[in-house]
Image (tube, rainbow, N blue to C red):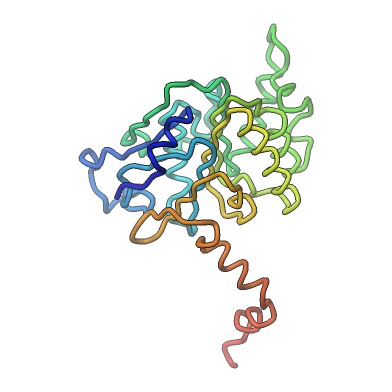
Length: 261
């Protein structure tokens, strides 16, 4: 299945146009990671020049796919810029070896792969590198000047978005909302918009209805039988959240009813 934005969007000069799976080289779609919904139905995936969201249920393969895209582009599998080479555990899948990326004519001046699950390792690596002798300024200066370990999880996440992301960049984010309150997620929307206005492109795997509400974007929803382009209102995340907010008492009553009843 081929999914993507209209060709006219390619003329807007984004950095990553699309990625496609070398299906003829896949050893078996019955084994991991090729058995994941995100991979089984992938032919080509075209990216919005500003923001692309990849959404779906846990286990559908969002993080595996976005990790493979980042690694195929040259980012460290555990996150950071292309200059980060730390590795705490070689747990990433070989999917990146079966992806081909199609880039635009322009090259980003900045780039970052942010993944919530290994952010602690990234923060540790920064502290360790700054303890080594260097002729340049401490790395942490570009993250706001305060060790990421000396901040709350949410504060350190937001410090990266606010200080490290400088614009004219390609930013690949895996569940960036993981430690952010709803108000901070809205602040992140504003920061994203600043960076988009500064010629940046985002590719984001998320569960957050707040983040995926960004208006100038495309949303891909991973389903059992397809990768579908959907509107914000059509995502399962928004539908379920709206259903709960409209009648929480009824849903709680249905969810919490005991087996005896």
